[in-house]
Image (tube, rainbow, N blue to C red; front, side):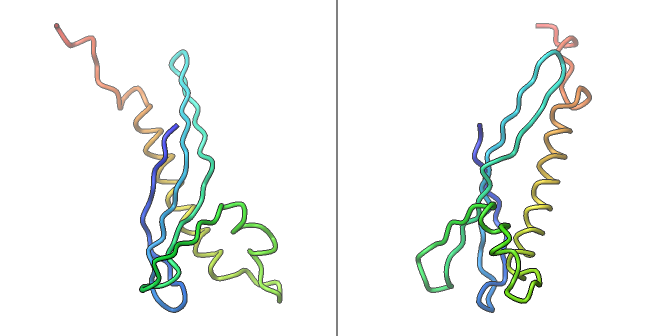
Length: 114
């Protein structure tokens, strides 16, 4: 398992605030095949540019019906920003995993003469 962070910014309280997206990746391989899991995703951000305190929120909390939709039933802009960040980062991670784990991406050790 590996913990990784991604630094993006979201407009929060009218200012772009740095947001860290943390997640765990588990990769298993057997007989030339592999599978991966990306889980325990959470976001961490500061409350304001001069505020040293941070908020940590699990993706499940942000994307729950209660927080995802405003009282009038419209998608919450903040949750939509988190969703976009999540989609972009996860697609990038999946692409990197598939490239790294593919046979063409691995070096040919048979040519190594030592």
